[in-house]
Length: 340
Image (cartoon, rainbow, N blue to C red; front, side, top):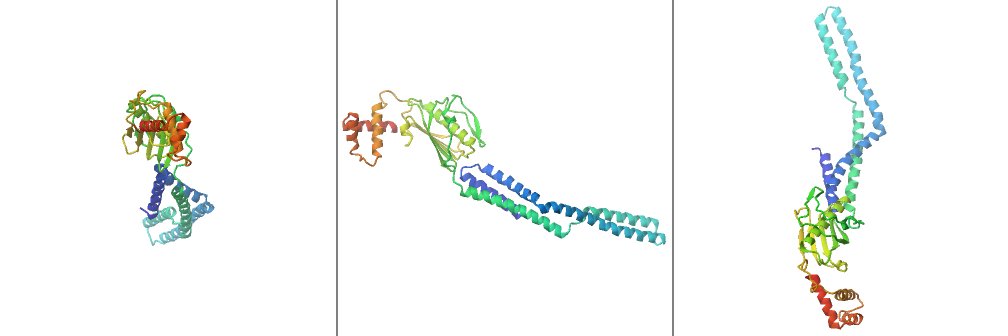
């Protein structure tokens, strides 16, 4: 393999590698660099004005290379004819020599070499084309090295919030996503869509508080399929997908409260983690709406620098008409429910 060819292939692989690290498709980047850069080089050669003129010069030189043997051949034929007329060579020998001269003429007409000057000019054009292709390839490499990951894309997640209740089979980036093995999913609402860079995405969804255990697993899987579909529609490579499920949108900035799914292309099935409370709720073990209001008010004040933790119960007790102990009990009840 020629050195320049090996260098070119290595550069294409580097483009693909850095494209993958930035969340792009490595295969597409490799094919783009592999096909586009030679085409640009050929285009440069074709558009060079000197190349068009050189074709005429090359044709002229070939014709001249073929004409020179013809002039020599005419002189040689006259000489042979004189030898035959003088009886120095026989008729048969004369015919043989004439045949040999014809063969030499045909060979010189086809294989007449180009002058060294023209060959050198043609090599210069090829060199210019290679330089142009190399500049484009280097530009692609610099772009994928310097560019930021896909962490600031404005994703439109309209499709992920819809659901038709059917199981699906789709193929993304040569990776088969199996039919939903957990049954029929429930509807869900997208709360947050967070591209994390390097092909990783995180989706936070809200599900019904009374969702069943298996239904939640099916819903998490359905959210995974829709996340994959959206990412590949946007031509984003995926190295990891994380789905976090909540029953209250006010919890969406914290750890999952109902379930979590993690998927990578190397895994046949995603990893699932479901909270113990899912599918086991009764009116007796679910916090009241007032307890939830107290909890979220407490948390808001807790993260507000103007309040210390010891002053929060007093403020909320006055606000909700409760005792300080009741405020703390409501807070602990909801916190325990979230972690259950």
